[in-house]
Picture 1 (tube, rainbow, N blue to C red):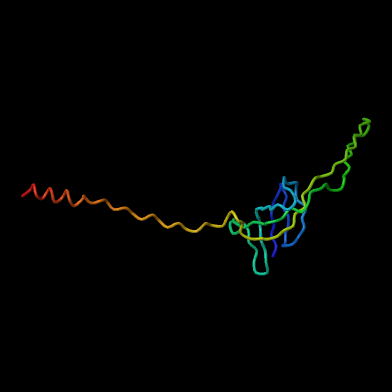
Picture 2 (cartoon, rainbow, N blue to C red):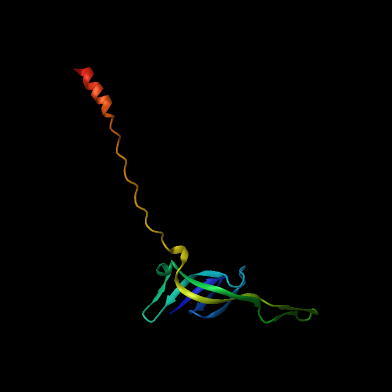
Length: 135
Protein backbone atom coordinates (compact mmCIF):
# COMPACT_ATOMS: atom_id res chain seq x y z
CA UNK A 1 0.00 0.00 0.00
CA UNK A 2 1.17 3.51 -0.72
CA UNK A 3 -0.20 7.02 -0.28
CA UNK A 4 0.31 10.39 -1.92
CA UNK A 5 0.47 13.23 0.62
CA UNK A 6 1.14 16.93 0.35
CA UNK A 7 3.39 19.31 2.24
CA UNK A 8 4.76 22.72 1.30
CA UNK A 9 2.92 22.85 -2.01
CA UNK A 10 4.48 19.57 -3.18
CA UNK A 11 3.19 16.00 -3.29
CA UNK A 12 5.17 12.96 -2.15
CA UNK A 13 4.67 9.20 -2.60
CA UNK A 14 5.05 7.27 0.66
CA UNK A 15 5.13 3.64 1.76
CA UNK A 16 5.55 2.50 5.35
CA UNK A 17 9.25 2.57 6.23
CA UNK A 18 10.31 5.10 3.55
CA UNK A 19 12.72 7.96 4.25
CA UNK A 20 11.50 11.14 2.55
CA UNK A 21 12.98 14.65 2.28
CA UNK A 22 10.14 17.17 2.76
CA UNK A 23 10.06 20.96 3.04
CA UNK A 24 11.63 22.26 6.25
CA UNK A 25 9.41 21.69 9.32
CA UNK A 26 9.79 23.33 12.72
CA UNK A 27 10.15 19.97 14.49
CA UNK A 28 13.07 18.37 16.26
CA UNK A 29 14.37 14.84 15.76
CA UNK A 30 12.12 12.16 17.22
CA UNK A 31 8.86 14.14 17.02
CA UNK A 32 5.77 12.75 15.26
CA UNK A 33 4.27 14.54 12.24
CA UNK A 34 0.98 13.96 10.36
CA UNK A 35 0.39 14.88 6.72
CA UNK A 36 -3.00 15.00 4.92
CA UNK A 37 -3.43 12.32 2.24
CA UNK A 38 -4.50 13.10 -1.33
CA UNK A 39 -4.65 9.51 -2.67
CA UNK A 40 -4.17 5.95 -1.42
CA UNK A 41 -3.66 2.78 -3.43
CA UNK A 42 -3.30 -0.93 -2.73
CA UNK A 43 -3.74 -4.17 -4.67
CA UNK A 44 -7.52 -3.85 -4.64
CA UNK A 45 -8.34 -0.23 -5.43
CA UNK A 46 -7.30 3.41 -5.64
CA UNK A 47 -9.05 5.90 -3.34
CA UNK A 48 -9.08 9.68 -3.64
CA UNK A 49 -11.15 12.73 -2.77
CA UNK A 50 -13.84 12.30 -0.12
CA UNK A 51 -12.90 8.63 0.39
CA UNK A 52 -9.57 9.64 1.98
CA UNK A 53 -10.78 12.66 3.96
CA UNK A 54 -9.79 11.21 7.36
CA UNK A 55 -6.64 9.37 6.28
CA UNK A 56 -3.25 10.67 7.43
CA UNK A 57 0.38 9.71 6.87
CA UNK A 58 2.15 9.52 10.23
CA UNK A 59 5.91 10.04 10.18
CA UNK A 60 8.78 10.54 12.61
CA UNK A 61 11.36 13.29 12.11
CA UNK A 62 14.83 11.76 11.63
CA UNK A 63 16.98 14.84 10.94
CA UNK A 64 17.24 18.22 9.27
CA UNK A 65 19.75 19.40 6.71
CA UNK A 66 20.48 21.24 3.47
CA UNK A 67 20.40 19.83 -0.06
CA UNK A 68 23.22 20.07 -2.61
CA UNK A 69 24.12 23.56 -3.79
CA UNK A 70 22.63 24.75 -7.06
CA UNK A 71 24.09 27.61 -9.09
CA UNK A 72 21.81 30.42 -10.29
CA UNK A 73 23.50 32.40 -13.09
CA UNK A 74 21.76 35.42 -14.59
CA UNK A 75 23.18 36.87 -17.81
CA UNK A 76 22.10 39.60 -20.21
CA UNK A 77 23.94 39.65 -23.51
CA UNK A 78 25.58 42.85 -24.78
CA UNK A 79 24.97 44.61 -21.44
CA UNK A 80 27.89 43.26 -19.40
CA UNK A 81 25.44 42.01 -16.75
CA UNK A 82 26.31 38.80 -14.98
CA UNK A 83 25.11 37.64 -11.56
CA UNK A 84 26.11 34.34 -9.98
CA UNK A 85 24.33 33.02 -6.88
CA UNK A 86 24.25 29.73 -5.02
CA UNK A 87 21.34 28.21 -3.09
CA UNK A 88 20.99 25.28 -0.68
CA UNK A 89 17.39 24.27 0.06
CA UNK A 90 16.74 23.28 3.70
CA UNK A 91 14.80 20.03 4.25
CA UNK A 92 13.54 17.71 6.98
CA UNK A 93 14.14 13.97 6.64
CA UNK A 94 11.14 11.95 7.88
CA UNK A 95 10.51 8.21 8.20
CA UNK A 96 6.96 7.06 7.44
CA UNK A 97 5.63 4.95 10.31
CA UNK A 98 1.95 4.47 9.41
CA UNK A 99 -0.68 5.20 6.80
CA UNK A 100 -4.26 5.32 8.03
CA UNK A 101 -6.79 7.26 10.08
CA UNK A 102 -5.15 10.02 12.10
CA UNK A 103 -5.35 10.30 15.88
CA UNK A 104 -7.38 13.50 15.53
CA UNK A 105 -10.04 11.66 13.53
CA UNK A 106 -10.70 8.98 16.15
CA UNK A 107 -14.14 9.53 17.64
CA UNK A 108 -14.49 9.56 21.43
CA UNK A 109 -16.90 7.13 23.08
CA UNK A 110 -20.51 8.13 22.53
CA UNK A 111 -22.03 9.95 25.49
CA UNK A 112 -25.24 8.66 27.00
CA UNK A 113 -28.11 11.12 26.70
CA UNK A 114 -29.11 12.75 29.96
CA UNK A 115 -32.20 11.31 31.64
CA UNK A 116 -35.27 13.50 31.29
CA UNK A 117 -36.45 15.10 34.49
CA UNK A 118 -40.15 14.79 35.21
CA UNK A 119 -42.07 17.62 36.78
CA UNK A 120 -41.97 17.33 40.54
CA UNK A 121 -45.29 16.51 42.14
CA UNK A 122 -46.57 18.62 44.96
CA UNK A 123 -45.70 17.26 48.37
CA UNK A 124 -48.33 14.96 49.87
CA UNK A 125 -48.70 17.12 53.02
CA UNK A 126 -50.05 20.07 51.02
CA UNK A 127 -52.57 17.95 49.15
CA UNK A 128 -53.86 16.44 52.42
CA UNK A 129 -54.21 19.93 53.88
CA UNK A 130 -56.11 21.06 50.81
CA UNK A 131 -58.46 18.09 51.14
CA UNK A 132 -59.09 18.86 54.83
CA UNK A 133 -60.07 22.44 53.98
CA UNK A 134 -62.37 21.21 51.26
CA UNK A 135 -64.33 19.06 53.71
